[in-house]
Length: 259
Image (tube, rainbow, N blue to C red; front, top):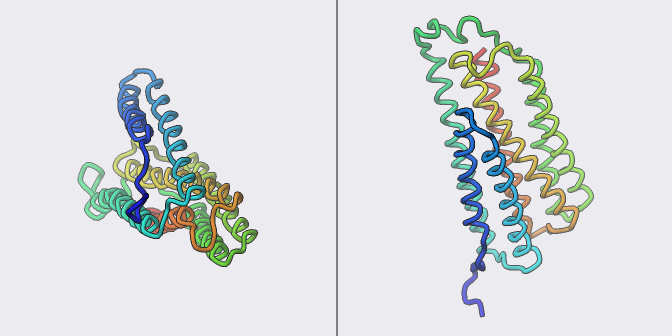
């Protein structure tokens, strides 16, 4: 008989196997950068994705079919997602720090000028502005889906979440086209490094968020969410809003002010 309101998980092989899978990625990346094979890196990426899929499958079973996620468990999950987003804020803060450190007081090595001489920046009010509009609209659509779930409007929730996923994929398509048009590369001074690292990692987060939303769309289609229990969707929505806010800071600081 369970004597605690919290879920005491059963023995699982995924944590230890996932640890070895994740270890293969940085080791394989370093090995590939020094001229070795990319096999270890590919094995690490594929096995990590497989471990995550199997692990989260078990979490979905525990919450949806076995009913182990009580209000105390849900509260803990929300706190965990919140702390994860805080760690992501610190992650992007490092990129902004590097960018403003280099731009507010340009060193003599880059000609004491920002942007550095020879760098042609992207047009502020063309593709970057369209990307901003797309992400802001996706924030509206995911809020629409959230309210529809709380009102038990299943069809409307599917429409809102589906639109959010389409907008996220469209953003990545626009970002790819923008990268192809840039006149500078990652190796072009601190400007190229900070630009591609900040925007590239943001694009990676959009791709992860789109994957998160696609899983939520499938679960919503299968009626896994109801008006009082949809913490999985809530985590995806919080993450997506975080991605939106980061892009606003990137657009204002790098595309507008930095140009």
